[in-house]
Image (cartoon, rainbow, N blue to C red; front, side, top):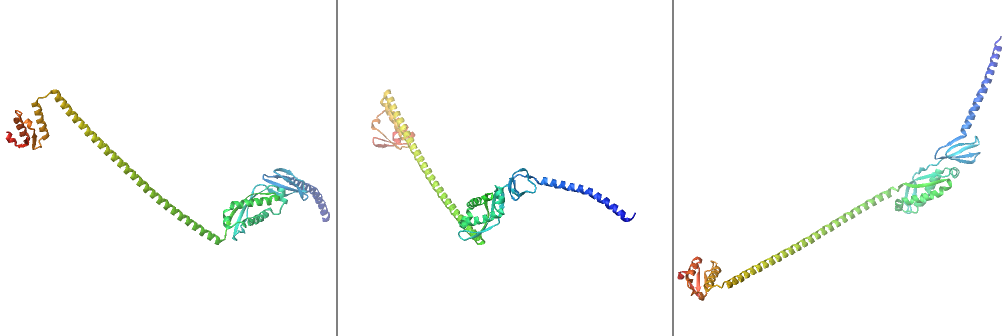
Length: 345
């Protein structure tokens, strides 16, 4: 046996071996392709998303949440759409106000896709379209406002922009929910002027507040003095009235006391006279009582007393009168004549 015969026999064995293995590999490949085709035809749409499906290049359907099957090769998913509300922050856009002041304003747009089909086929690059539409709408609105109105009318600008963008994006299957002005950046010179104006305004308000405070303080002090003077006058008036009333009451009490004393004295005198009349006294008793009355009238302080001439003849009068004069050390004038007490002795 030569070498050529050996090689030919080995080649035949290898050909038989490879022919059997090729069938197996082919089956494996076909099976893998079938599994891939079946798995590619099964699609699951997650929450808050939608798939736009095309068949042979034309719109076929819009898939919502859940599991879906498509035809292999002829069907394909053209666009995956997010249905949640989205936020886009656009860079600052240069705008010019009505009074020719150039400023930069950046906006934030909140939008939501309501129709996936219109979103997929309505406009190319929807986000870029919204950005350009926002810039042009903002320029139109700011062009009708002056600088001060622009700075103080954010809510009005937001509302106008939202209405305009919502109407313009409706054919694209997009609903604009809100538009907010994030920053309004005026030129540096305008910012400096605004800061100076604000400083002057604050200083003016401070001066007004100080003046009003001083005015109120002066008014309060004057009112306090006025009320104090009124209270002092009222107190003095009441004190004067009380003093007058007290003096009046004291005078009345004193007059009443004197009247009562006079009444008592008069009553006592009347009672004395009545008692004397009832007792029917003799002349001697009357004379003696008269002398006692003279003694009480003198009260030890008189130096002279006048005795009526009718009493001079009474018996025993000299002795009694001498004793009376000894105790009182007085001079007596009888019938217009002065007599010493030694003369009576």
